[in-house]
Length: 190
Image (tube, rainbow, N blue to C red):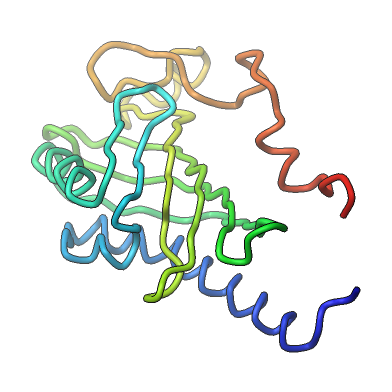
């Protein structure tokens, strides 16, 4: 059965709303707008990181996590380079997204560059689409002065003072690419 025009228009509207959500995140982060977190996350959202450093559950814990980050940061500027989404075939109020971008930050007085990805799960709420789960991953997080040499190795995450392996490209770390293929391979039976 083919989708109705109304269904197709709603899907376009949903895609645009998810795209806006991906971009709004950077503005809320850069302005340290803790009150704005409710416009981004569901009340029961999970915020994690591929390196296991973050594991906040619920909007209050997420706010505490971000406040601790803000305490270490000076000015920041988050850029979204690409944002793609796919919808859950069994639940019209659930979607999945991949967002890539970078950030320019001052952390503990040092100017740093960050290449990042967000692996998201979105949920439609009465207030609109929100992030229900976000897992952050880094290709690099390093001082500007270290960029040229650090990019040549695997330990490109210098955010915590000690060199740590980068989270991606996944293929360089022997990881399965199923997470990516889910965004371009049709589900069986589709």
